[in-house]
Image (tube, rainbow, N blue to C red; front, side):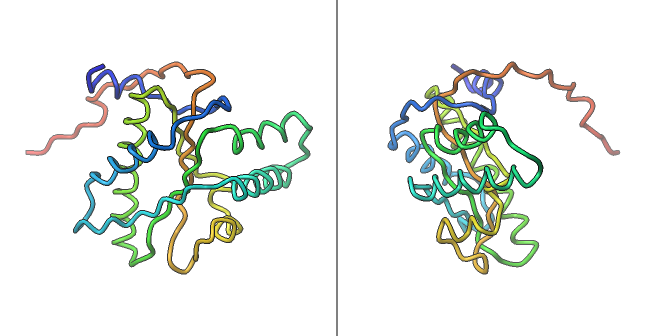
Length: 183
């Protein structure tokens, strides 16, 4: 598949099978992500590979947070747990704390790095989703992952696994809508 086709075919995957993905494939994608453009080559991101204990604690936290918004039936609670337990890998995404301007640049490079890793994995038939909600951004998550909130800022989690299904491609607006020319 050529690059344009790879970009156009990649989808955010929401549902994953429990099928494994070789750790080496994920590690290779994360190594490739180090080529993301980053200001002064500061490499500000922190990838935390979420292990089984932390994953189970995040699943409990996710269910708790969702239940605070309203009652959950068993099916919904299980679906929330599965969203943390089924994917082959979970990688927490964070950046080092700094001054606001630097953190803005660091978030941009994190975004580039996640896209590179996601594209590499997609080329291998592996889906991803960058999640920024619920348990991924909660204060308790710092404790679960052993991260110091005084030193790093969580920016979500990269969910990685074999897709149960691939969402349809939404139509994209024409480029002309986004281009402004000056004289």
